[in-house]
Length: 113
Image (tube, rainbow, N blue to C red; front, side):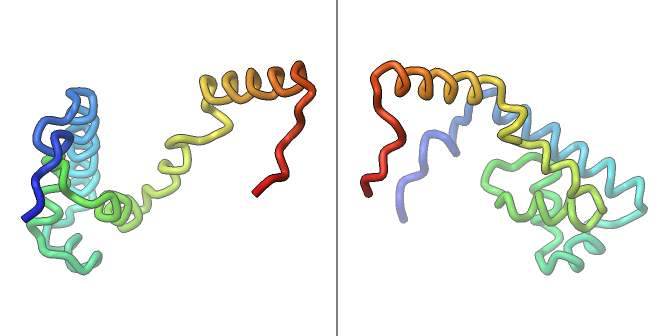
């Protein structure tokens, strides 16, 4: 058995908190729709324990389960805002710096592969 990564055994607090919030939000959405773990699991083709794990924010639960839960409750549109490149102010600023540096050095985009 491969060794467990430090990330999965001791994730950063912010990651752990975000998953717990997401899980709690998904649980609230499920309950508001009067769905059981079994109802949701059946729709996604997973075991009901997988739904319970996601709702508790278990780090090892696959991202596909979280996205599937959003889809099954008609909440998938909200995921388009996650890491939207148009809203990434830091990334846009950094890419602008790269372009200015290339312009100053006389180098354009590289065509080398």
